[in-house]
Length: 111
Image 1 (cartoon, helix red, strand yellow):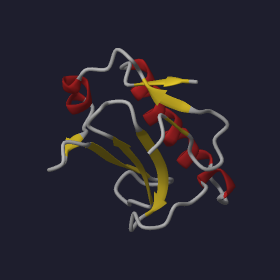
Image 2 (cartoon, rainbow, N blue to C red):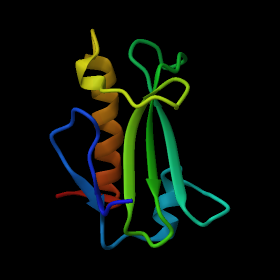
Image 3 (tube, rainbow, N blue to C red):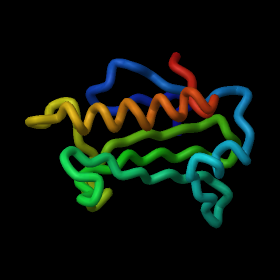
């Protein structure tokens, strides 16, 4: 796993903020796995907040240095480029909102 990550189609690279605290991760919805890593799976839907169409998946390793960020289909198995979807404005808006929240909470920084 790398110390920086980018989402397919996004122009920004992200890394974990050096000031990060474990409790900040749980405050924004990260779940700790049995191995001690942190995992966030957040739905990003286009038209309806009740219909899950895509997911933002973020994994932070237990050392709080290594990071992986992906956008996937509803199953969570296939990485997709949300920036190339038809009628993607609402999906991209929700993606940007989720990333901005992580930047504001000092979990991620832009490299």
